[in-house]
Image 1: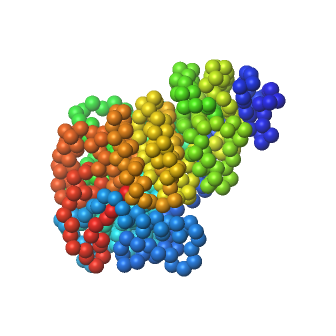
Image 2: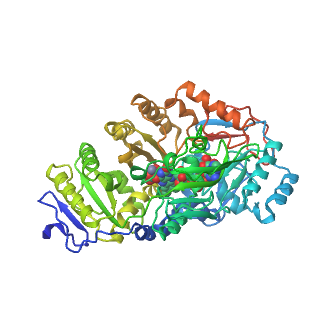
Image 3: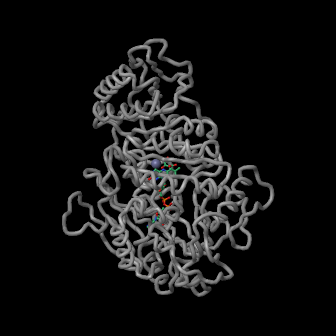
Length: 582
Ligand code: FAD
Ligand code: MLT
Ligand code: ZN
């Protein structure tokens, strides 16, 4: 190996000095599970942030404001400030007067269904369940139910429907659009106790499990049998497969394995009237009429509660390579993508984009992270992963790819991980950006689908527009045309939000993109749905909602714009009358 290509820190680096060759010691077979293991504790920390902070928060008057109990650190103080500020801005949502409030009798009835242990009224636990991962949305539910069977879910929902009690289905509560937490006093139905693996066929690779199974646990279970989950995301240590299905989560492997609309073979769903619909097929091909399960994938808990999932999972391949590249400009990133598709083809398993401000966020706020290319000083970075079954073949392909992209000047600097620890360190940066942003301050988070040509232009345009008012960062799944545009500021401010919205939504609509590529609409974006869907399509969505949930009890105020335009009800002792959405 050329000496200039080996950095002192042990990473294999290559510059535009000449041909990039593989080090003799290069370990081409990086076990992705091992990479992931290194990140588990990091993930648990970040995805359980709400829980970690709970003990130090106390709610006041059951209202919008939070206050520290005793001694709190600066991070907590900042969150308190954000909470107060946030609820002083933006779109107002009124509590739907059709919904009743929880009575003592209801509690007793729920205990008769799920037992005393399945009815959570503990303040700390409720605070966590009422608060979203970003600490941006705060509900006021007085009760969380933890059913253990589909029958119990059905009985809960039947009862809530008859009593006009609104319900929020909740998984790991890692959603990023405020969909998983109550807006007011909705009953939280958390699927976490339904976490059994029902069956796994090692020939077909078909997995059937309950909705509350944690994604990472499923990956570990099938990993031991030579398979892997077709989706992977930074929240895998906490998110549940039912939540993944309900958000149609994309993540880091969609490029390779496609969306859950293709991988989910069947679902069991409890409808708003409590009826259990068995669509839990385990067939790869089934053209018997309408494919009803598709309606529930990505419906964010507004059409039914997912209780069981059947999935086609791919074989876990042994040869994994991870590379981190620096590019001179965004056009070069596009060129690398074009080449990767052509040259790496079937072994390409991730193509992730990180701009300089996003990289800096991670390096500044995530302990233990290091710049993989400290001397490059570029503004554009790519994390590329290949996964295949033949080490020699994969190596040859990647070699040729690296050589040609460097010769053509598309890649300015690069490093290939030599082992699983180094690969994990690259992934830690990419997957940790959302956590880093949360630590940096207030975040306005957008998740757009745009053509490769426009993928980064929106970041630049917004950056120009905001000037020094905020830090605009861009990262995301470039291979899927999914940009994560984030605006990081010291605090939430009306004036800043007014500069960002509706500007970004109009920009996306003008360029024929989608205002939500993968995170969904939740509470954050129903008002923006019309930028991506025609009036007729929205009307049809509303008809489906009315058909499946005539009383609108399932996750109200979310997804559909109409559901938030409701009449306000007088504030009860327990409930806020209206909420304000940023
Ligand atoms: P929750 O957050 O609890 O719920 C999400 C929505 O689904 C809510 O509307 C809820 O009502 C509904 N829901 C949950 N369970 C059920 C059920 N059983 N039946 C019916 N409705 C239900 N998303 C991506 O697409 N790609 C990413 O790469 C990605 N990375 C992330 C990284 C981090 C660090 C974090 C915090 C989030 C990330 N997300 C990503 C967001 C993503 O939506 C969630 O992580 C995940 O899919 C949600 O699963 P969950 O179990 O936490 O669901
Ligand atoms: C990601 O790709 O990192 C996730 O979707 C989370 C985020 O957008 O911050
Ligand atoms: Zn993402």
